[in-house]
Length: 346
Length: 189
Image (tube, rainbow over all chains, first blue to last red):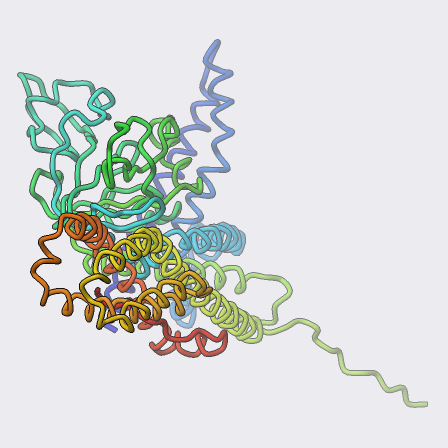
């Protein structure tokens, strides 16, 4: 019950923040219109093309503003009993059935899409609960989970270390024992770097042996589910900004045969637990890559520095919070639609 | 002549009716989604058992292939244990004929018990343990036992997860509805 209440409180908090942030999209839309109206010469074409973004901005505004708008409307019900909103400008904004119907429709559509996207997190949660923990030495090809200690893998795929963010001399900022690293603002070799991501293959070692993990292509993220786009398929969820040699680690993903394994290799030496098959990593950078990765149906891959029970609890909380958040959006949007639908008897 | 006019009938529905219908539909969909999710989850844990068994079955077959060599090596010393040796050979053959995982697991557990008895029997013969042929066979079997132990742990964990899931409420209702039953564990050798 406590978890449900906490998730409900967090969801309410998020919607208040979203509602307050929603006018930013309106300002952006107004900026685009102003730019189109005032543009001259060669820039005129680009400015008018920018107007194509207006529907997307308006929809985002509707999605973010719907729950707060519903809350305001509920308050107005009580207020209307005592004379209501008299000023015509405020009436046009606050007591406007067209705005409510629009916000309700946009919110309803997005709530249904977002609820359907929760399946990814639910599926991952089920995998964590249902999969038995494999021993590193005998992990079979297919979906597995392993637990143990992270160990630096020297000489494994070293030619293909992935870094993202601004190019800088990461060797001075990232400890030699780091496998996963999410940098923030750092001073390195006399220059200030902003952010970077660093992914290097590593071993998970348990009492029976070790298995190679290839996290390249995965994305850093907390256990909090992305509100609109659902669970990213390949994720690195760390309680701190790095995973160092000797840290406890939990990995779930697909074990694949290694194409570069020596012919005499045995057991776990012949396989790798990889986020993506070779050559099939997300190539699109930035938001486009994130959205594309989230929307595509790829293999499950999860690395965490908590134990299995902690991963299960965190994913469960994340799912509950996202569900509450989307349920609030759904109810608020439905209510906004219904209060102004012409076929209803109020 | 009095003309009767029908009272105007309001064909519109009330907000309450729409919300009540929406709530009933949403609850119905949520219940159906839950049953489907539980069923799919049970299918997944059941498949995990099958997958874990396939991984261990390869090694068990390899160990069974060594059993005739073991029996041939020890039968000269253990002539008074001919019944035990015959039972081991019979169980090995029975394992090959078993069709379900349950049946194979039960046969394997029985075979392990008989091999335990055989182990106790040959410990009384230091000459046998010193034999190079016996040492070679036992080295191969021991190497396989070590790998089997890892995979047996995985198999038994899969079985534990499955048995807990089908015994837990409310999954129990779906498990009974679709005929899921408890699965046998694989005992250590």
